[in-house]
Length: 313
Image (cartoon, rainbow, N blue to C red):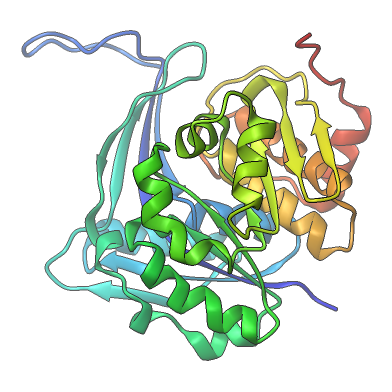
């Protein structure tokens, strides 16, 4: 059975600049090696990597009726993502970020939420979602748990596997804001900082178990250079990261989400799905932007088979 995925939520146009060690004062200027742009956001970036790995992907959300939106749609289409479910909003700009990339690959962000805030449950393509095998909701905190539940609940009722990833930093207020939707999420895919902030837990394992108690089926949390942790009611699985030269961490979490979900769609057990997720993240980390790398599923599997893992003990 073909895996068909609808990614719904945040669509962002990223401008990346590297390397940046500081912002020039006043009217000063600094020479850099590279400036590029690409598709980003927890819906759009996840869609790109899912398409690279062979899933049939449609993405849904809201962008502006502006030139940035035109470019974003063109870049998504270039990667094989169906953008026919993306809505254009007049008078609102497409969400965008400027990312000054530090020499170590980390980056702060200057961000405009834009049209991402102009999407509501009544905009969701429920009929198309019900015919998919999987719904990935990127940034449910932008609309809140009650609104997100109006998208997730009918998808679950139709037999669609659901997942979600977050944009916002975690804190207990965000968890309360999302609470009405959590029981409709099969897989939650936060990073470690978000998970610990949401739950106030001391460890990722404890945080994941706290979220399982809220009705989530599985928590797969990314741990940066330590890899990922997958926690279900039955087991806790640690998967190490791969040892690669990191250029830019932008989109690595979205790439992990895509690889993990693609692995599940192929019928792989959670450990193998997480290995594919870590491989996708490592491939993306070696270049600039969420869409870095011309890899496919075979290349990602081959990379995982031949590449050493990091020793972070």
